[in-house]
Length: 323
Image (cartoon, rainbow, N blue to C red; front, top):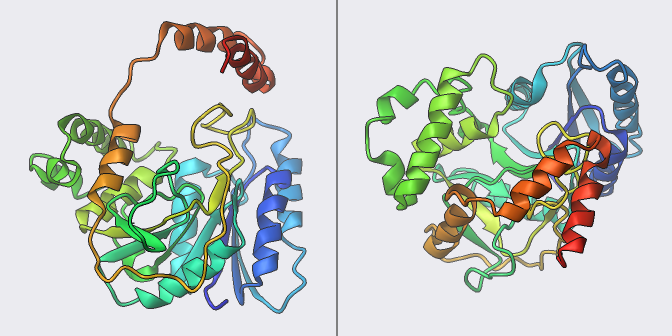
């Protein structure tokens, strides 16, 4: 492969090892390592961060290694954001992995081919590894185009696209009063949802513990398109008790099976977003659903149980209900 790989890690050495094993098998010529520092209120982070960094020192192939390690904790917003910006100060393209998302081995070749194919095409701003169509195939080709830049742990992009990233969303006040989001999403409740998301991200940029909403804003503000594989190439193993945000292992996006991409790729002869795929994902992700009484009770009971045991408790309750 030719593309550099960037790996963002923190304090989960077991998951880091699973992801790094796939990176090592791909043998990228350049490896960029981004690590966050331990949290002050979590004494065990010092050891766990050190163990995670030790995992990625086991490099047994010819590879240039660059490191960007923070001594202090920057959090889930600033660390990936500053880390990815640093990556594109070094290279003009990269495959980006987080330490809890294990890619199928074919993910690397898929990205490598398409990073080269679309390197000069300003319309394309991302190569995604996730497929959240849940068994629905979109077209007859190896991939389709989407207005959604799903970057849940394994994706790729170029310096030319990332230059539009702005953690503060400084363009939001200019676009806020326009029909921009409605034109993109075509569903009023979804447009209202994203307007609230972007307003919050703009107002709270000093304390935001996320970066992907800001990337979505930049993506849409430039009318970007993403390449989305027609099979899922990434499995997120991070939905567990020690996650910062996503602790519920019953989430629909958790632990999805992967399937190998078939080569040679069959390329679409056009560059047009798949409207059916985007409407499906919009309804899935941005149209609010009221939780059932059962789920409200389940979540209340689970919140009373010690944190490490909550996913197990929720799974038991689901089994008792026959799910």
